[in-house]
Every structure is written in structure tokens, then in C-alpha cells.
Image (cartoon, rainbow, N blue to C red):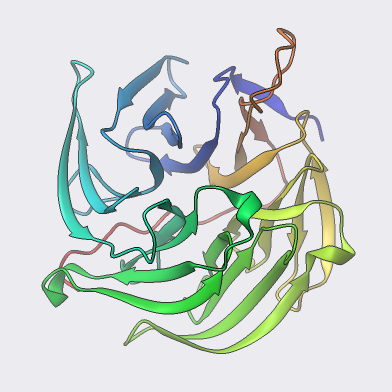
Length: 297
């Protein structure tokens, strides 16, 4: 299937695409530039906002705007029509060292917000990353559920919410795990290897889960998006015209379009390169709407 370039965004690190059905629009971020961006499927127009810190991941907030994982913690963001972006700190993450930020994240099916942390310099191979859970009803308490990651990524939840997926995309790891997930308490357990990406092309980056319960993972450095069945079998792979796809998300009027964000490496000066763009594919299956952050949990 041929991927269609919908935005020649040239993002340094495009990530966290989220489809908003009510707006018929796709939002995503550019991490190092603190960029929040929106593409309208109706007009093709792109709006952009600037956050005060690196902006790693977003999820729609039940009361409007977004909940976001940034450098220092969890924020609520309100993009305005005039191009300004209001930001409110919800909770601070106590990183184990100063040179860290949040990375991949999303809400579970019940509306709790999850995000992992990482050391900025991946070359240090530092397993200081943690996976955090945030629920507003706990007086802004952030719970560190899992630790020991270099680059936590690939967070996703099965359609019934009872399985959680998580990867470490660092070249030294390249594993995807599955967990049993208690939807009442928001606690993962029974960690096991779901996919060893060392046996497939590409490093595991951002992910999505479709309506059939299959897990889609961007194969960074390989230019593919892989679909794995719930038993961890590679079903098929879709190519994208860039080396570093980062994260995918289902959207479109029928939730049957797969949007893919990507990285534009700093050494890519080719004016014809599509790296850093946002692409759309027709995968032949449907996805699920992204859950809203539930601030009553």
C-alpha cells in the first residue's frame, strides 16, 4: 500500500498523533521544538502552537484541551485560535537525574494518563526511565509503576483494556512486553515478552491497537509499520517512504485510516526528503477512538 504524504511537516521528532473525530482533524507533536500541530481533513490547513517545554505526548482532556507529558511533568494545554497556547502544570515528575524528559504516553481505556520517561541522550544507555500513571482524583499523585527502561515506548491497550503493551526502543533492548491490566485499579502485572523486535526489521517505537485487538508498531530505522496479532505473530507490514516512522494512530471518518508521524534527522539536508512528514495509509482494518483523560478517576 502506498503511503500518502498529508503534511510535509519536517518535524525534528514528530510523535503522538491523535485523531479527534469531533473536529475531523489530526493533532500531533514535535518533541524537541515543543510543537503542537493540527491538520484539518476538511481544509488541509495546519495550525501550530508552541509549548513552553519539550512536548512528548498528548491525550484529549474530558473538559477540553489536552493533557500532555512534557519535560518536567504532566500539563493541561489549551490551544487558542490566535496561536497562543495556555499551559497549566498538573503534577511534577521527580526524575532521577536532571537530563530527562517524558516520552511516549496515552490514556488507558478508563481515562488514566500514562507516560514513560527517558534520559535525553540515548547514547548514554542509561536505564533510568520509568513508566508513570496519573489520575487527577488522587490529588495529583503520580505513581511510578515500572522502571529500568532506557527508552520506554509503544504504550497501548487492548480493546477491552485488559492487556497493556509497552516497549523499549533502545538498540540494546528492542523488546515489546504485554501485561495483564487491572482496569479497576490501573495496575499492570504478569509482564512477559510479546514480541522480540530483534527478530524483525526496525526498532519498536510508537504504537496503536486496532478494533480486532492487533498491535501496530512503527519500525524505526526500517521504514515500516508492523501489525502483530494478539498472540504476537507478525501479520503484515506496511511501508512508509521515510526511514524513521515514530508513532501511528487510527482516524478518518470511518476510523480506517492509519496516520504515521516521523523523524527528520538533523543531518538530513535533502530538500526532496519527506522525513519528518505525516503520512496516511489505508490498512484495511479499523481502529478505535483515543480515550479522553478522565479527571474524575
